[in-house]
Length: 324
Ligand code: ACO
Image (cartoon, rainbow, N blue to C red; front, side, top):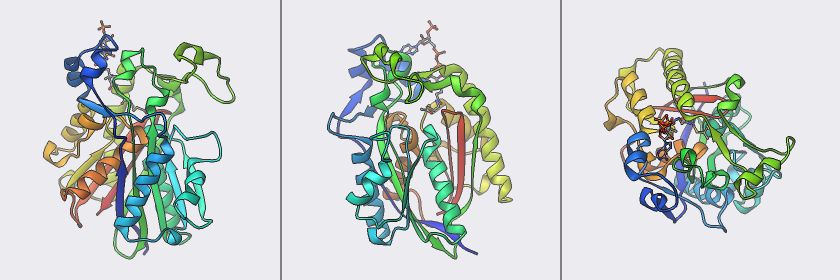
C-alpha cells in the first residue's frame, strides 16, 4: 500500500506587523474587541512589492530544503490560493521556473480558506494512485489586497502568509485519509464583490480594489457545526477515537471557533496549534503555517497523530488525518 508522507515543511510571513493598536488609529475598533471576539493581537501584511507568489516561493524553498528534496525531483506542484498573482498564468506556473521545478503539472486550487486542504487532498490522491512520487503543496494568500480597510467587520481579521509541505510516496503512513466538501448554497455569506466574468464595477466602493464581503455571525455558526461533522467523519473513516489525536491543527479564522473544536474533540488547548493571535486569518496559508511552526519548534514529533481542518468561502471545508 502506498501512502503520502510529509517529509518537509516551510513557511513565510511578510516582515511588516500590523497590531490591533495600529488599526485603532485608522478605524473605529479596539484592541479589546478584536482580542475578545477573534483572539487576534497582530497580523502580517505585505508591502507593495510582495505578492502571494513571493511568499509562496520562500515557503516552498524552505519545505524542499527541510525534505532534502531537489526541485528537479518534484513531479506535481499545487498551490491553494484565492489571491493569485495574476488571473493566469497560475501562481504555480509563475513559480515553477523560479523554483527550478521540471515541467511537471502545476496548478492553483481555489477553495478559499480550505485551499491548502483541497491541494493536499489532490496531492495525496496522485501519490496513492502512483502518478506522482514527490509533490510540492502550498497554501498562500495576500488577503490584505482584497480587504476593505474602511470596513472594521472584515479588516481586523484578514492577513497574509504562506506555508508549504513536500509530500512523498512511502510504505509507512502518512496521510491516513483526507476529506473535502463544498456547499454553494452558502456562497453569499462569504464572497467577493467582483470577478472576471461578472465585472469590476463594484470596485469603486473600495478604491478600485476587490473586497471580501462576509456575514460573520452566520458564517461562524455554520463553521462550528460543519467542522464538528468533518472531524467526526475523519476519525470514523479511520476507526480512531478523539483520544488518539496528539495535535489539532485548525484553520485560524477565530479563536472561539478553534476553542469550540478543541472542546468537541475533548482536547486540551495545549494540544492545539494556535497562531491566530500573531498571524490573523491567512486563509489557505493558515494551516500549513501553523503546521510548520509546530514542526520547527519541536512540538510535533514523528509518530504524532495530527488532525488538520479548515472551513471557508464557498462554503468549502476539508480535513486530513496524518500520522506525522
Ligand atoms: N471592532 C469593533 N466592533 C465591531 C467590529 C470591530 N472590528 N466589527 C464588528 N463590530 C461590532 C458590530 O458592528 C456589532 O455591533 P452592534 O452589536 O452594535 O450591531 C458587534 O460588534 C457584534 O458584531 P458581530 O458580527 O455579531 O460579532 P461576532 O461576535 O459575530 O464576531 C466575527 C464577528 C469575528 C467576524 C465572527 O463572526 C467570526 O469570526 N465569524 C467567522 C469567520 C470565519 O470563520 N470565516 C471563514 C473563513 S474566512 C475565508 O474563507 C476567507
